[in-house]
View 1 (tube, rainbow, N blue to C red):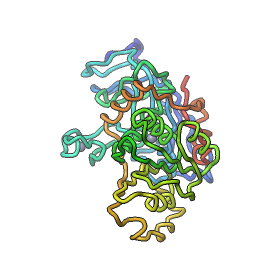
View 2: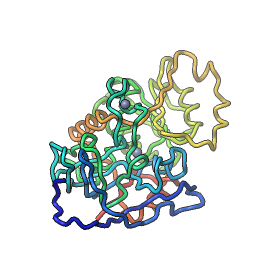
View 3: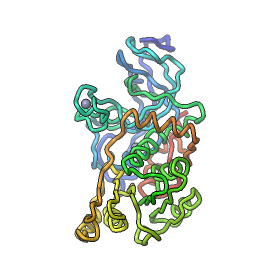
View 4: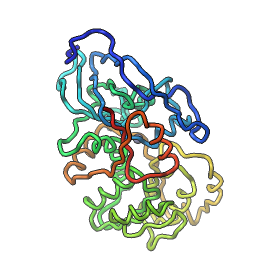
Length: 354
Ligand SMILES: [Zn+2]
Ligand SMILES: [Zn+2]
């Protein structure tokens, strides 16, 4: 191992750890501040000193068991930025001091048909950072060098962190929506990912009108501020039919209304790793003629590829997209998660790790 550390004694780090699946409604402190040994990188891995890690809705799904971690206890967090402090013996191309990011894709098998055809996000061996391998809610993390991402100069660590998930998955959902300049796009939900999609559209597809459905008045105002031409409550009817809708809500009702608002041949892209079951009954309102006929399409977004992350980082740097961020110290990760659950959202939440 090539390292900037001379000492071989075990070093200890602070981490916020999930020990058991729980419900945030009853347990407002699902993560425990813990001391863990600093991980040792394998031969093809990097050891990274983390300085910022984004807080994602997917962490709520992990904590509450909708996409449960495959190992417990686990250090969550899949949008981390930091500096390389040591590299495994087989690593080339990275050295101590390099700034890198880790995204949701921790690794994929690299050998199956899906991996070889550019859809490593669908690989049966897909491992997610912070769910199937320890993530960035900690002072240090290890990642396979092949799955690390260089961070463009233009961003601070905190700005770059949410680009790695909210931005990259927003980019993938925009690609899957097949929207062209001048088409009309709807966004249901206006959290971290959707606000970055709106920024991308303003730049890349300047003639496209964007209509936003959001529950809170604050989110609606924020959407208008960022260039949405219409932003109203989830139940409202948009002023014109939509070519595509990207849904980032955890609920079912917005799915049903989005389908009703689509033009013939329109596309609904559901960008959510899991839906919550609270309003599942809404699906019984599906009327084939109103919601599905006329070749309307529904597609989910699953994970991201390394290519999504890299293409999006390059685009974000070129624009540049600066996410609206709200910072919290690592120790206050639970507060950030509760606020996310309660939808006290403006932009994206980022943990600062001293
Ligand atoms: Zn995420
Ligand atoms: Zn594979």
